[in-house]
Length: 133
Image 1 (spheres, rainbow, N blue to C red):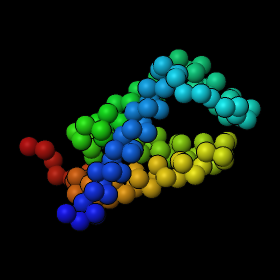
Image 2 (image 1 turned 180 degrees about the horizontal axis):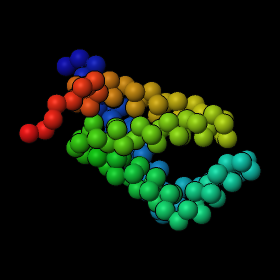
Image 3 (image 1 turned 90 degrees about the vertical axis):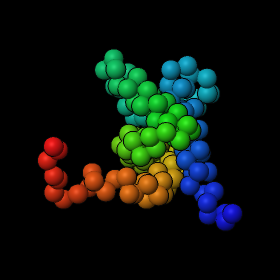
């Protein structure tokens, strides 16, 4: 079997592990944290003050990560993670640049997997939709 056949499953598992661990860490907080700039701290404080946003973001990461790891509803998991990945890139680009390289790896994996599963998105990206019967 060609090595190319292993690239998409490996990307899916790496992305799945990353988001499962990070999502779970949002609830259990088992990973060590390092000091962050004041602007990043203020950003997270604002998310916590909503009373729901951190739980929503971490829950989405956890569920989507588990879906990727179980190889179930992968296109849905990728669609759920797309806005999360965009916000991770923006966060690191503007508030914590030291985390940008790993964030760019996650973006590359997300884009690669979305391209791999592009046929699942064709109906969603149709210019005109047909009414359901």
